[in-house]
Image (tube, rainbow, N blue to C red):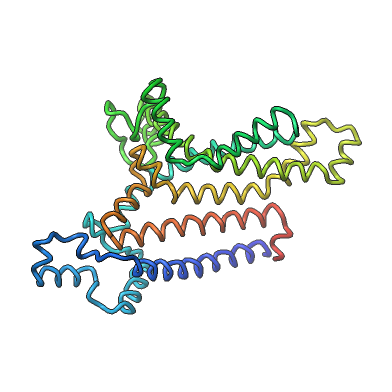
Amino acid sequence: MEQLKFIGKRLVYLVVMLLGVATLVFILTKLIPGDPTVANLSQRALNDPEIVAAYKARYGLDKPVIVQYFLYIRNLLQFDLGTSIRTNNPVLSELMRCYPATIELALFAIIIAAVLGILFGIVSAIRRNSILDQLVRAISVTGVSIPSFWFALLMLYFFYYKLHIFPGPGRLSNSFSPPATVTGLYVIDSLLEGNPAKALDALSHLILPALVLAMFTMGLITRTTRSNLLDVMSTDYIRTARAKGLGQAKLILRHALGNALIPVLTVIGLGLGNLLGGMVLVETIFNWPGVGQFAYESVMSADYPSIIGVALLIALNYMVINTVVDILYGLIDPRVRCK
């Protein structure tokens, strides 16, 4: 019962935060300089008052701001994000079209970041102040510091253009057609289609952009794992277990690592949220048809409905992930449920 109450409270917080973020996004969008009418109509159409009036009436731009807000909230509750001014398609359908590409890339990147980050953090903590520790720490600092767009260009130049080890931009090679959509994830859909060669090609296209995106989060996970593992290793119960003759591997895996990884969940959650919403430059460089590229095109064309939709999706990503992390905290550590 206590767990259900804790989960219910977090879900209520999620709804309240989503409404607050929706309101904030609407306000900020109205403060953005630029007129969508000017951005999306030709000069000849702008000279015709009837066309301008019809355009504003179609997208609700002729109504007072407060009326636009209540219409916006009403439509949002009905899962209606409006119509894209740029493509003339529903924003929700546009997001559903490009979101699977972002999910596939983000999940692959966070898996790489989590596995390598935790492994490097454990090695660095075990071999503290050794040459190996210094090397791992240098890699983690580099991962946090290097600009993603510059690293993406380097990876493409060396591994695609010079060495021809990995394929270039895009989700598939030109010799393959997109698989039938089931999940929207090309690797899984290709396997469901019974075409392992296509799945392997889709996987190979994931490697370079995923490595670029994983570097920053991997650096954070490495440093967090190392710091927390060193703190746990200095506690009394670890010293007692070591005095009883417990081996180093069992000491870390069975006693220290579980407590040390609890804060790492937050880093992984925030990293996944960042990957799901902050890949504009990397997706553009790798020509990856995801949310980041869609956001860039929407901003360039002053497509306000699409901008609002992308902002809400990114906010929803963060809030859902943080809520899941909070619930996992409560399941792992009962003390959290009392807060």
